[in-house]
Amino acid sequence: MAANPPILSNPVYERLLTGFYKKMRKHLPAYRPEGGADCLLMLTLAGAGSIRLANGEFRRSGRGDVSIHCPRTPQWYGVDDEAGFWSMIWVHFHPRPYWLEWLSTLPEPSPGLHWASLDKKSFGNARKALTAMHLNEREGSSSSRDFAMNFLEAALLHIRATSASGYCGSACDDFGLTKAITAIGRSPGTPPPVPELAKIAGMSVSSFAHRFKAATGVSPLQYSLRLRLKRAENLLLCTPMTVKELALSLGFEDPFYFSRLFQKNKGFSPASWRALGRTRQGERPAP
Image (cartoon, rainbow, N blue to C red; front, side, top):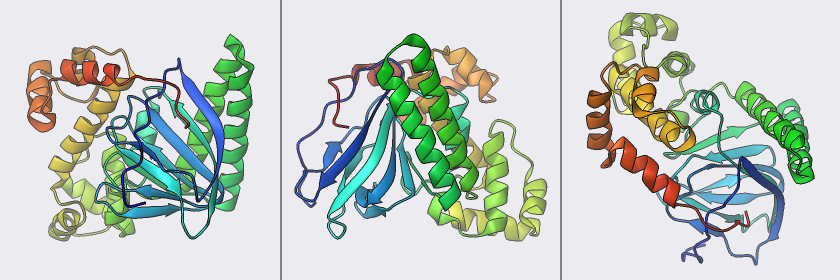
C-alpha cells in the first residue's frame, strides 16, 4: 500500500450510514486525504485491516479492534497483507454532542484517530449493538432509525468502558498519568489544578509536571487548551451550536477571544471551519 489509491467521495446521509465490509487483499485501500465531515467507526470482526497514521506508519486492526476517525481526519485503510482478508462492520455518523466527551477518553494513536482493543465481553456486546444498529437503519422507518442511533450509542458505551487509557493515547503508558489525563478530559474547561492532578497521579507536583510534559509534549494547562480546541472542531462540524454557545460550553467566557484563539491554532475562523466541513459532501462511500 505504498502508492495513493483513487480518492473516495464523502457520504451523504441524514444521521448514520452503515454496512458490513469483507474484502480480500486484491482490493484497493479506501482513501480520503482530507477526511469527511462526519465520524467513521470500524470494528474488525475477522481477518485484519491496515490503517495509516498521520506519520505514514500503518497500524494493524485485528479482531476486536475498533477505530474511529473524527471529522476532517485523513482516511486510508485496507486489507492487511499478512491476513489476506478483512471483515468488519462500519458506520459513518454525526455524533450526538455528548458522544464527543466519550471519544476523547479513548487512546489517540494519531491526531483525530481514536482506537480501542476490546476484551472478549466488550467485543461481543459492541458487535451485537452494531449489528442491531445496522438492521434497524436498513428498515428505514423513523422509529427504527431512532433505535439505530440508540444501538450505536450502546456500542460506544461498551467501547468506552473497555478502555482505561486517557486522551494522550500510546504516548502515555503510565497508569498514574492516565488517571490524571482522564480527569482533565472529563472537564477540560475547568480542569483540576496541578497539585490535585499530581495527587490523582500519585506523584509529587514537580515529578508530575516533568512526566506529564514528557508524555504529552505540553503542560497540563496547554493540554487542556488543546483538548478544548479539539472538541470545538468537532462541535462546529457536528452540532448546530452557535459560536457563542460553543465557546461558553468549553469554558471560554469571551467568544471573541475563543474565535481569535481558534483561528490562530487552526488557520480558519470558527465560521469558516464549519462552512468548510459542510462542503465536504459527496456520494455514498463504500464504506
